[in-house]
Image (cartoon, rainbow, N blue to C red; front, side):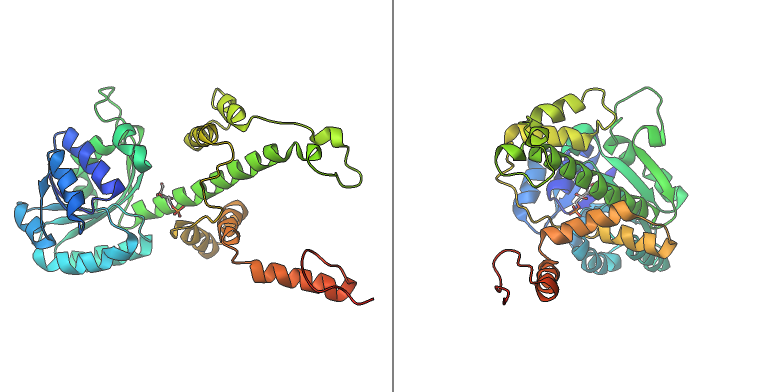
Length: 330
Ligand SMILES: O=C(CO)[C@H](O)[C@H](O)COP(=O)(O)O
């Protein structure tokens, strides 16, 4: 198929390369001309502007946006007047699903189709393929199937696997793809938090070798010196918690057991918050995913003032001092 790819960052560039390798023709646009040159070096065509991209494609056009969430509205405002009825825009970013529902309606009034695709696979997707969660009208999604077949992990697999087994799924009408991806990312936070906490506990299992243990704790119970990379590795083989995130943990720990080059402050791009909001709207308890989201806020010291207030209160009611702070009056 002929596709216009807008956004040639880590995801857009790698997806374009996988599509080119699968025999599709890509015309790409990115605000960074260097990213467009890289696409050209892999056999794609370059467009110098969104206008040029639209003109380079034959109607009915398919334009795939792989952009940060913040750039989708402006890009659609520029694109929409350039497109013709029957053209299709795909948003493959981590967009809030309610924005996708609204955009599908707005573009639909102009005769344009809008398909939301949650894409998971990260920087490894070019080789491994991408898991695709798709929302939109059935007929439009069906027309785009050759693209999904190529991007999904089982591309080139002639086992006869279809749809979900290949790694793509039409989840429902507009917004459904981004809704499913939102929850996927919410789960991702939870699994990541569980791995982080578990490895932290294993790392602490030798604390009695380094410091005086508290009353009632036998130092012999905390005298281990675990090799975390080895533990992650052994868990990868046949354990109940084997997973790709565990594979990535094993690789990270092998490269540097202290993870010294990584920040303790963990950002979030929005999907975790939206998942928790959906859980609130649905009245579904989601303590694990919520705690994992709050862990990220804590990592950025968003609760530092609250923690100081805890210390202040302990001081006020009991004269307890924690760390540097006012000395209680006798
Ligand atoms: O879509 C993704 C993986 O599937 C995102 O790359 C990942 O979820 C990053 O999100 P956050 O910045 O919130 O951690």
